[in-house]
Image (cartoon, rainbow over the protein chains, first blue to last red):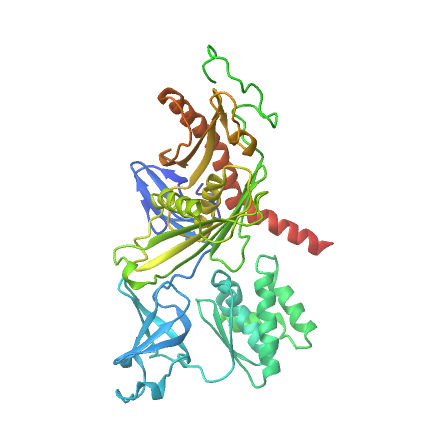
Length: 237
Length: 251
């Protein structure tokens, strides 16, 4: 079982028997057996066994970038809905500019969208922050939704896929791990083309040689693709 | 199988199956793209679709549990699922089945990671030929796994029956409506996949304790086969779909 790195399990299946292994996320111990608790891919690192889910709803983790909507303005911050199990809280102190505490709605009002970083995940709730480059209020462009499990395919290896699309369409793309993608470009046509390419990736996410297919698709839209060598150079940096 | 000393009126099954033979089963996951998890399960002409949504915030707020998430199951038969049209919407029977399915599934899911939330399971029966609650449970267990919900084990369920004096596995509507002799007894049973514990056991009719024990054993071995199909659909289902997709692309 250790040889095959991409082995799948269903809940209740025994992954290994023996006391030398430790159950991690998605696994539990029952006397001598380490049993899967989730449907997903087995990940064994040394003696630590995890099951990584391959489908289902989005679970926030610390450090994730998410895109959400303001659903409530409280006295010391905002409540953000990002399609997760719970709503996130953005405190005034986590906003990198002066905010008049009596007029929170002047900065972020109901229904406005933000890019935020997940700062803390507790059972009480999720805290998010805006105090870094690239995070903040969304004022232009479009937001599209994709299946959160397919977000890694949109990003690509070390961001190669996003870079490919960015270079082709000249749009800024911010991918939220919750499946929301913010696209902002010079014209609405560029943004629609970007959306088209991302939809293509989602629909072909299981195909082999996805990058080549995406390049072909970009060319079919009448856009230029930088030669692969240049992309490789850029991602190595 | 049954006590051979007493002759049973039901000697041959209406659909020519063996007494311990289940109907042809098929299963698939990911059938509803907009859901967090979904599955379809079919035995013979009984078909069940299960959809899982969540974890999501639970409303009304007074139902929220700060210690754990809760499971909410909704079972319903579609109006065209049987010959006489069923009035759509909640019914007394539907509410009862929703509740027993909820209890059957609650004992395997572990929702302590999601306090104050709810996981909704919707079971719909588009086509019914007896054994809808067990088909629904089989689909629901697969859909929950597909939604990435932490579960200690899977659940497989089967309806064992006693037709006159004969014990049969996976009864269909004809057998359920059998009126001669002792008539029919319907026993839906749900087993957990690893420890083989019973999470659902209902009984509609008359049966002796000894026969009930025998019926449970029959159900247990039938559930092994069902679990195989469920596991296969989860592990290999997507692969097949992808193969079909890539074949189409090649053409």
